[in-house]
Amino acid sequence: MTSVETAPEQALEWHTAGQGAAIATVVQTWGSAPRRAGAQMVVSGNGDMMGSVSGGCVEGAVVVEAMEALEDGAPRLLEYGVSDGDAFAVGLACGGTIKVLVEPVGTAMPVDLLEELVAARAARQRAAYVVDLQSWERRLDRIGHAARFASDRTGVEEDGRTFVAVHNPPLRLAIVGAVHIAQALVPMARIAGYDPIIIDPRGAFGSEARFPGETLLDDWPDEALAEVGLDARTALVLLTHDPKLDDPALHIALNSEAFYIGALGSPRTHAKRVARLEEAGFTPEQIARIRGPVGLDIGAASPPEIAVSILAQMVQALRRPQ
Image (cartoon, rainbow, N blue to C red; front, top):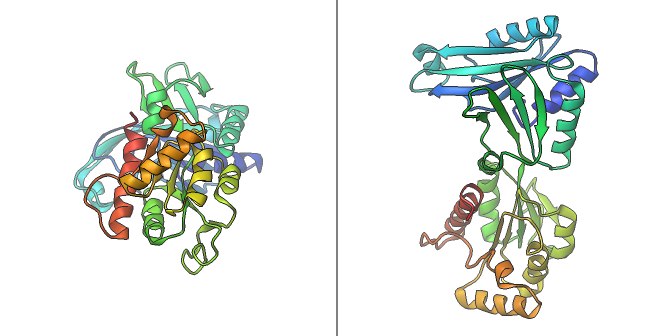
C-alpha cells in the first residue's frame, strides 16, 4: 500500500506513463480522524488507487473527486465528517473530521515541481511542499519550517491558508556491532520506522543467520559509514565494546550530522573513550554529542531492555533535540 513514503513517486510514474494521476493529501484533522495530516493516496486516470487518507471511510468519495479533478484539471479541498459508526468500522473509538486536498498532476500540481520533490527524496534531502489554499500557488521550501521538519509535522499554518507537507528522508539506524543487543534493537527500530543497517567485520557476528533479511555490511566501520553516509536523519549506535571498531566509527560520526550517537560501555569505559578522542583532536563540544553510557537510565539489564532504553533515547533525541 502506498503512503506518504511513496505517493509522489507513484504519482510521477503514473503520469509519465500517460495514465494521469491525482494526489490526495490529508491537510487537517479534528477529533479522532483515522489518518494524520500528511497521509496520502494516489489515484490514476484508470481509477487505480494506492494509499489511504482515512483508513477506508471516505476513500470512495475521494476517488470520485480525484477522477473529476483529472477531467477538469482543477484542485479540490474537501472536508469529510467520519461518523461514529464508520469510525467504529475502522477500529476507532469515535468519529472525526478530515480535510483532504486533491491535486491533479500536470495541471494543479506542476510536473516539474513533482519531479523536483521526487529528486530531493531520492537524494535524502528534506523538502517542504507548500501550497496556498486560496491562491493555489505552490513551491518547494528546503530552508524554512525547521520546527515542522524536526517534528515531522505536516499541517496548516496559523494563517489558515498555507499548507506545509513535510517530506523528510526516511529514518535510518546504523549499528556497529552485531551483538545480542543489536538482535533485539533491530526489530524494535524497524517497528518504530527506522531502516536498520548492521556493520560488523566479524563474520561470526554479522551473519544472515543472526540477522535474517537485514542489511549487513562486513567492512571496517569507518569505511562502511563513509559509504552509508551519516545525515541528519540517521542514528548511530556502537555496541562492540572494542575501541578498534568503535573509535574509527566515532571519528566519522563526530564530523557528521547524525542526530544521535550512542556508545555502549560503563562510565569508566566512556571516560577512556573520551580521553582517546581528546588525544585525537576532537573538541569537548563534539565529544559531548556521544550518549555514553548509551540509553535512558531505566534500570535496563537484559539485551532487550537495553535495546528499549536505546530506542527511547533515540526518539528523545529526534523529537526533543537539546
